[in-house]
Amino acid sequence: MSVMNKNFLYITIFFLLALPILGYVAFIAPPFSNPTKNLITVESGASVRSVANELQSLQIIRSTFVFSSLITLFGNHGVIAGTYSVPTSENVVALAKRFASGDTRIQTIKVTIPEGSTSKEIALILSKKLSDFDSEKFISLSAPLEGKLFPDSYFFEIDVTPEEIVKTMTATYEKRIDALRSQMESFGKTEHEVLVMASILEREGRQSETRRMIADILWKRIARKMPLQVDAVFGYILGKSGYAPTLDDLKIDSPYNTYLNRDLPPTPIGNPGLSAIEDAMTPTKNPYFYYLTDSEGRIYYATTFAEHVANKNKARLR
Image (tube, rainbow, N blue to C red; front, side):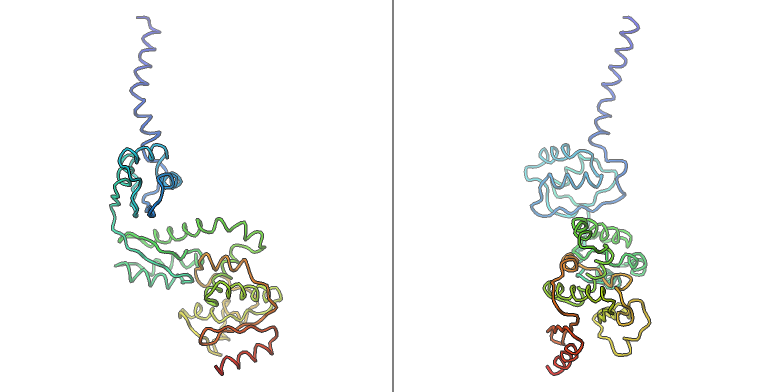
C-alpha cells in the first residue's frame, strides 16, 4: 500500500471515529454558555416546538430539531406541563426524556405577586412562602430595580435564593415589556417615566378606565409644571401600605413628595403590571386637572381648583 493510500486510510478512520463525538458536541451536548440553573415552566397545552424554541433561546439545547425528534421518540403525548429544573450538565437526550415523561425533579412553591407591590411588600410575601428566606438580602438587591420586578405568579424551588428570584422577575419584566418599547418611543416618554407613572396609576385607580383618565390629568400637570399632589407616594415614603397621609405628611422633605415637587418621583413607587403600563401610555383625553377618590371608591373630577374644593366637600358629606 502506498504512503498516500495509507494516509487516506488513517484520515478516513480518524473521521469515522470522530464523527460520533462531533455529532454529540453539535447536537446533543448542552451549550458551554448554559447558565448554572434554569427553571422552565411548560404551560398546559404547550407545543413541542414552543418548548424547544424556549430551550434554545435560553442556550439550554443546541438543536430544536433533535429535541423535537426525541420527544416524538420517547412519547406520543408531547411535553408534559410543569416546572422543570434544568442543570448545566444535562444533555438533550436526558432533557427530552424528562419533558416527555413529566419528570420535573424539583419541589416548587407557587408565589403570586400582586400588581403594584413594592420590593418590601414582595419580600414579605416571599418570607411567608419560603422558609429561611433572606428578606434583607432580597430588599438590598431589588430596591434599585423597583418597577422592574414584574408582578406575576411564579413557581420557585424551595431553596431558591434572593438573587435567583430577582433575576427571574426582572427577566420576566424584560420579556413582557419588549413589545411595548416601540409604543413608549412613539408616545414620547422614556421607559423610566412610563414606569414611574404606571406605578402611581396602580395605586390611584382600580380600573383601567379610571387609570387612563388619571394618566391624562397627571401628564398635563407635569407639562404645566404643576405638582402632582398624589397621595399614594406617602405609603412608599413611610413604608406603610395603603397609608392615608395627614396634613403634616404633606410637608415631608422627600424627593417623592408630590406636593412639594413639580415632577414625577425619582423612581417607581411599586412594580406595575402590564395593564397599568399600557394605561400610562394611552391616556383618555379630558378637560380635568384635579381628581379625588372618596372612602367608598367613587372618583370626582374637576377642571378648576374651586371645583376640586367643592368635590372635597361633597365627598366628605357622603
